[in-house]
Length: 197
Image 1 (cartoon, rainbow, N blue to C red):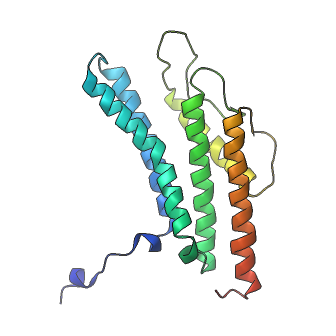
Image 2 (tube, rainbow, N blue to C red):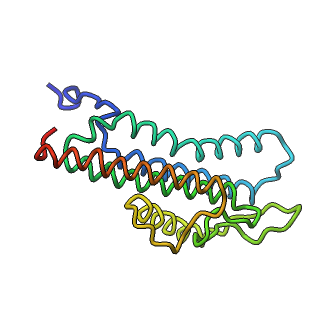
Image 3 (cartoon, one colour):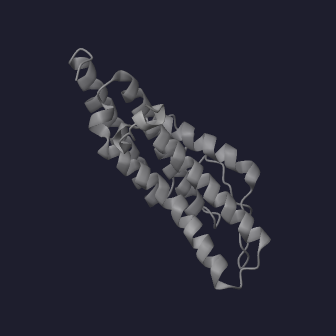
């Protein structure tokens, strides 16, 4: 019998939660990068490029939320072993960093940064002119968002980065509650039962 025919497709809930967060990051960075290349390369007078750009922005913005939904739906399966719990915690760090990055991308374009201390990816804002992304700053912004998510989810609150806008504060509050939930419910339950679920 062929080995390929023996392989059964795995359920989406059985996949490592870390993969879902990495896919959401790849979609976010890829779609925004492709959209920026399209903005710089094509004339935007027609309807088709605007539709394509809207679809790219939509995929980039929806990817972390879909990943977070799968993360929540697969919680019970992922809370069974210590390796899965660690992967789940790392996935939550990456997902929250992705949400912070999206907040910076969508609301930081006009020069008013929603977070103090996160490197902006936008060039200087000029009224009446599209603001381009500075690709050199994308990596620095991603690192800042990951650092902020680690400090927030671990409830350390280092203080070098903090939200300044109400919507950024709301995102951070949700991050704190999710971090506490993982710490208390998952890790606490795992060790209180002697490592058995």
